Length: 163
Image (cartoon, rainbow, N blue to C red; front, side):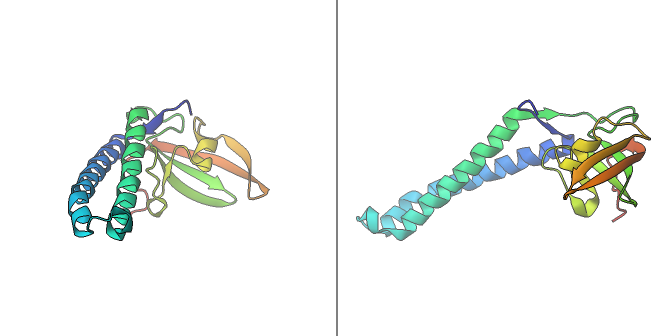
């Protein structure tokens, strides 16, 4: 989707907090290097503790880098003010294969199936994004034709499942 990642306010705050936590953990790991090197003796190539720590640091550094990449691509999506089309921040009631379900369309990485939240970039959400109440979408999934009917679009942001 054009190199941008769309987040709700809540999702962006979560990503920022996770990034800060990853950075703090990376600093903790880096601070251990001198101690681990000293405890392992002068033979750096036979220091298993040091080798493992370096692997952990590299992995954590990669996670920090990935988080910063996501932040650099992040675009805050404000909640919609009208509900004539399915968009991030809307709740949508659909009928799919004779089964009615209600989903909230949320930002990147914010999917939570246990609470009926579906990120905008998932296949089902992509199929219904921008559609209006009453529209029927046909798509292929699991090797068969699936019809999805948009029954209702409303404001998201509250717990859909009642849990």
